[in-house]
Length: 185
Image (cartoon, rainbow, N blue to C red; front, side):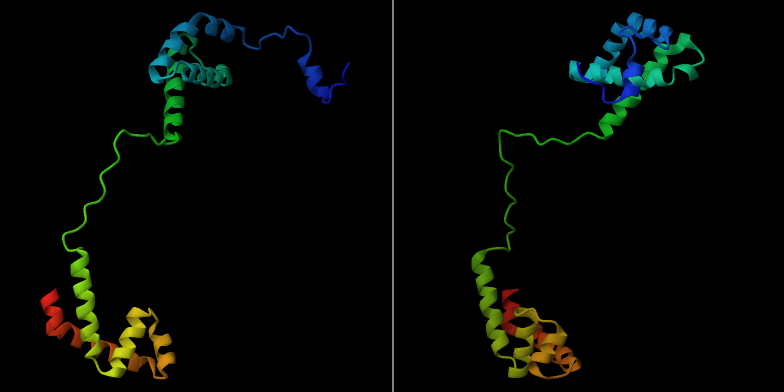
C-alpha cells in the first residue's frame, strides 16, 4: 500500500461516492446535454471539438451557478457561454499552412530589368565616373561603391567632411548632366 503524498487531498477525496454540490446542475446537464451538444456541433466542424467546447461552457456555467437567478433561462445562458467560448477560441486560433496543387506564379520581371540594359547602364556609369576629376572620382567610389560614410571617406582621403560633401555634390551634378547617361535612361 502506498502512502498518500498530500494528506489534505486524500482526506478531501473521501469516499468513492462524493455528493455533487449542485444536484440541480447535474440534473440539468443530464436532461439538456444532447440539445446543447447539437448547438456546440453547429459552432465547430469537428465533433470532438464540439464536446470540448460544451465541456468548457458547462464548466463556466457551473462556476456561475449560484449567480444565475433565473434557472428557467439556463439554455440561453449556456448557449451564450458556448458562443463566447468559441469566439475566444477563434480569436486565439493558430493559422495553419495548407499545401496547394499549383505553385504560385513567380513575380513577373519588370520590363526595365533586362540584364543587357543593366550591363549597358553599368558600363555607361563607369565611363562617366572615369571622366570625373580624380579627387571627385575617388570620393564617389568610396561613398557609393565602397559604401563608406562621409566621415569615413574624409578620414581615408585625409580631408574634411565638408570637402567630401561638396565634392560629391558637384560630382553627382556632373553625372546627372552626362550625355551618355542621358541616352541610357
